[in-house]
Amino acid sequence: MMSLMVKSKTEDSVKCVVVDGGELKSRRHLNVQGKSATLPSITVKDWDDIKFGVGNKVDCYAVSFVKDAQVVHKLKNYLQSCGADIHVIVKIESADSIPNLHSIITASDGAMVARGDLGAELPIEEVPLLQELLRHQVELLFDIQNISIRNAGKAVIVATNMLESMIVHPTPTRAEVWFLAVKFWSLQICVSVVLLRFPLKAVKVMHTVALWTEATISGSEMPANLGQAFKNHMSEMFAYHATIMSNTLGTSIVVFTRTGFMATLLSHYQPSGTIFAFINEKTIQQRLAVCQGVCLICMQFSEDAEETFSNALALLQKQGMVKEGEEVALLQSGRQPIWRFQSTHNIQVRKV
Image (cartoon, rainbow, N blue to C red):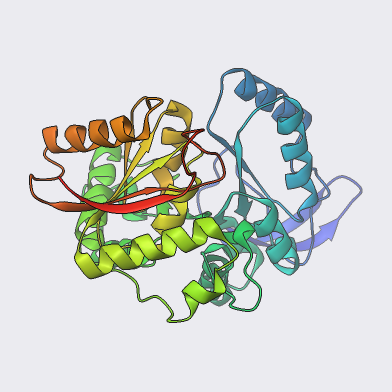
């Protein structure tokens, strides 16, 4: 990153003195501290690309430089008018977004902290604290007095300056690996958007660090009065008890879902056992790839619940994911019933 100080200006140009020099590449972003750009978050070219994405059934859109929730609502309204079920991820990379953070997160399906641009607009020492604030905003937080399920199940993505040393070196620094592990411990997703010289090795590093780190994450402790607080929210109640069951009995959870909502809820409860999410829509399976601790399996559901349960357990056993005699928790509870003539909500423990 380069720093320049403006010495003079004309109507269409400025004269600067280089404070911190460096290599100036094409298509770089310009930040002026204390000033906000008046450009729209979604340009005319962006709308053309959005239309192309709708036609090709993309999984989600990431909107850059979101300043308020209005642009999120505008995009979601357009997607709804097209009949497109596409998620919207907001990129928090502008100081203007900070005062409106809560409304932006509430309107979106997830958030990305672009630390590069954010660090250029804010004092660099404020970026880590803001990153944690964002995580707390979008995590599944339980307010016992006022539970809002709209804030549940949203991904937190950390971007920029990830494994930066691998732009030129085949191995990362120990500090970079430690940072990755910390992010995985806090259940955040890390992505690298830099042009690495060793991209395949970088992906392998992130993969192995994620596997080793996730293996050390134990089931989260649940507040004792959380079940009482959720007495009017059936799906949350079932996810809560399935998690308690998994943590107490040491079982995996087998969940059946059409929308992915229940699998997402379970992921944020962090049960100690693996969540096997059976889905009959490929697009939902791809979207749930951001959920931690969820093994996604696409399978057609039969019209009979019992037959579907048996087929799922047989598939898990055939693939070596569960063993004969092992107990698993079966769960089906959500916004859309799978079996019309049977209970929408179903939780039980079965022996394979």
